[in-house]
Image 1: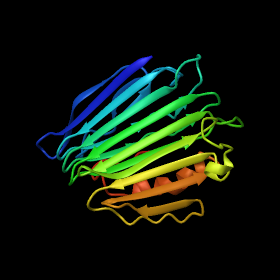
Image 2 (image 1 turned 135 degrees about the horizontal axis):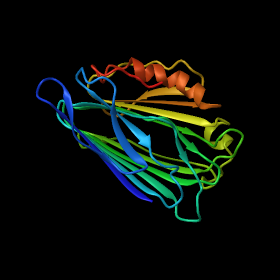
Image 3 (image 1 turned 90 degrees about the horizontal axis):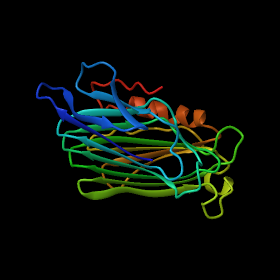
Length: 253
């Protein structure tokens, strides 16, 4: 299956944000949600079909114009499944945030079901004066099953300069994978990247979590847990507590 989706948020000239483009194909269906007041817009990604399955090629393009504010959520977790014998499934997400624009990317976790082979590629470009909150959560397998294979390749640039570059692999395709060697025995991992000129100084008081300043206007927070509940307990308050999207409530559950 091949599917593409696109969302373009622009300032409406009255202190708010409008959606100039909102289109998608199953399973990448986009719906505007939440109140229409305030300065920002909330969009949910709705899964219109099972997957991703092996062989699927999915792409989501996000553009946030000058002065626009966009929050991207998903209705449910994404479940990567094995499917037929085929090449790895792939989800590519690109995001462009202009000067004065704000993007909050807060999807529900990706679950790597046993036997899956999935690649996630994220490419984010933030102009100087733009602001970003980018979150990714991964769960290694469903309850009581082994993890499938997932490779996550993330690149965030700010003002034309690389701010964060990371590639992470779990499952049978990871060299020396046994869970403990990569995640210390944990089965869930969460990452939050904050980028912008005015950022909070987050505090993550947990043994299996860390916060570090990036070499540029950014902060990285990571958490590992036995399950996703432990990761959410650490990172959810950090995401809810940031002021990078004034006017749009942080309604991630």
